[in-house]
Image (cartoon, rainbow, N blue to C red; front, side):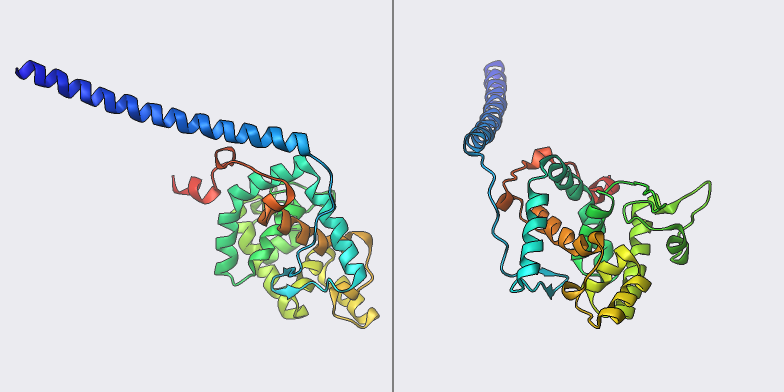
Length: 258
């Protein structure tokens, strides 16, 4: 009798394990079917559309004047370019999932608006890149700027490639620009073209409104590129992107805790 009880207990445990495995496999199978169906439907219906620009668009809490036709047109062009740049956009979604939690934490601690997390996306693509001008790292800091804010830059060590330290240095730089310019939108512009050049254009054109300034092509597009990247990364489903969580890499914050 005792042996029969052991056998029954063993069979019961085995049945539970098999049932759990079957349920798991059915869930995975259903998920794959759902994703496959989405892909098939998407490919069958895929068309290139112009997207509607969100009516309440802002950068760091500063409203974008979409009632200005030129601003609306530039935003429409930037959004179209970034939303249909599929390979690049998919990579940005994956890299953003990895690095945003870490960057957001440092920005918040330094009282920098969260929207500045999109700067590394357009500056370096979240890569430790080096520009032809010598800017390095996620935040594309020049050596003089990096040293000014406490980073070590020499032939043996370049802390511009250290994501946490370079983000903290970028925060110090952004704060300084805010004190000098007053507007977060102008801070973004100055990050691209330099504070002295920004002040020169403000004085020459008698306006501190970024959207009214006549600038060179790169500077004129800069904030629009940030806004477009913000829209695509913050609302992927609105632009045709559906990326299952299992296809996204772990965040850098999670990795750091391991």
